[in-house]
Length: 458
Image (cartoon, rainbow, N blue to C red; front, top):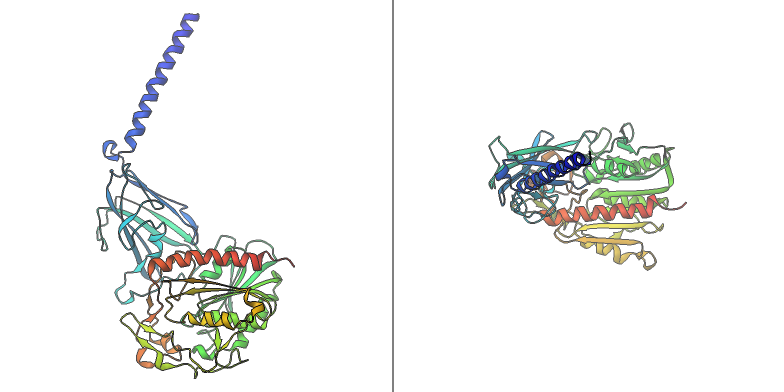
């Protein structure tokens, strides 16, 4: 009996040894797809995630040192945007976006999110089109495809060696969006839960006025956010210097009266003219604990007059055009510029500044800080980004150096001479530097708002 048992055990051990050798050989062969004829495949994690979240792209099953072109594309607002990069697989036939260098295409080097921030519009007359998600309630669907060999230009072939789709969200499931079409125009975003929540106003610049992407993201981070339109809607002006500031204050007062808003945790965020309006709100309302000004003008031409002045003080002779588009960052000239006193009630102020801004000159942020009374200077935090342009958006968004507003929208910018109305408008910024600025400034903005709005004690 014992001998029979021992023989059985011995046979089992032999089987295990053979299986172990088999798996060891199999593991080695998996690193060389050519030897094992394993088809290339790509994984992206998360396949569904927020737009301010990084993704891991892993391509396996290639031949050792194989060169491939990776292409990403998305269709939004009837326009197709595409990016591409060229990778060389490692000795194991693998590519990883966090460690593999791009050797060609729209960006070079190790840029984990380069396929997203380097997207360009393929439509011939709209090379300068911005990729803006209009319906933030639906995901952006990106196709990511891998092609053999290096392709610096758009690929006509419909035969990638592998591919997948990725969905990117601006609004978390559970965040509520309420369209505002009455006296107040825009959209209100409310985080999931019962509240009361910290609350923010969010305003963009004059060429667009209403963009909901940042507001949806901020709500996804726990803030009631009012994306406020102040131009182009029914009952609102079509000229930037005809904006009625009382409309903005009415919208703010309506927001803070909502039951789900914590009146002790309030802030404001704005870009361009929206930054100016956010500073103006903060100078009036002591309830606003913190304001973020992203490349917004910081001055008024008249002491004590925050808003309500005309555009006559702007120097139209300083508007000029280049091969890339119209530049307006030298127009804000007056004899005695007066800084908007957003500090006077003790609010914390975060300034995000693109040093290559072609619409608002960076010098006005320096002027703002210099004119701030010494006792409030410590409340101002400024981040300057060399090589970044005007439209510093949430991270990984593509950024053209110039945009094509069209004649109708260019006419709305009072101070742009008629002869330039068919031109592109310069924003400035270089792709890599601007992308890094967007990523870094978003993290800093979220930390700033968390410290000075979300986590403040009553």
